Each structure stands twice: as C-alpha cells, then as structure tokens.
Length: 65
Image (cartoon, rainbow, N blue to C red; front, side):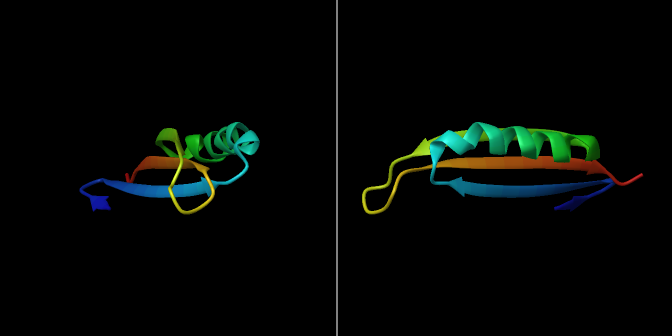
C-alpha cells in the first residue's frame, strides 16, 4: 500500500517445523526493523486436511520522506 508519505509492506510465512518459528521471527525482526515501524505476529494453525504450521505475518511501514 502506498499512502501519502508512507509505504506499507505486508508479508506472511508458513513454517511447518514449529521449532524454527522463533528463530525465523527474530531474523525477520532483525533484518526489517531498521527500515521502519515493524509489527510481527505468529499463530499456530491446525488445518483439517494438511500439516499443522506456524503462520508468521509482518507489517512494516516505511516513511517515504
């Protein structure tokens, strides 16, 4: 999304080995936090017909000025 003066990027990842999820979240935070305001969330998902996974989503707002 490109709003007046700011650009927002949205992303999501599926991590099927939940032991790796914390390390992946730390890596996303360390790489992207320097570019703007960052929000990272995780949620465990257990679908009925496929393997369970951890959904990691992130939202970063970058100031265009």
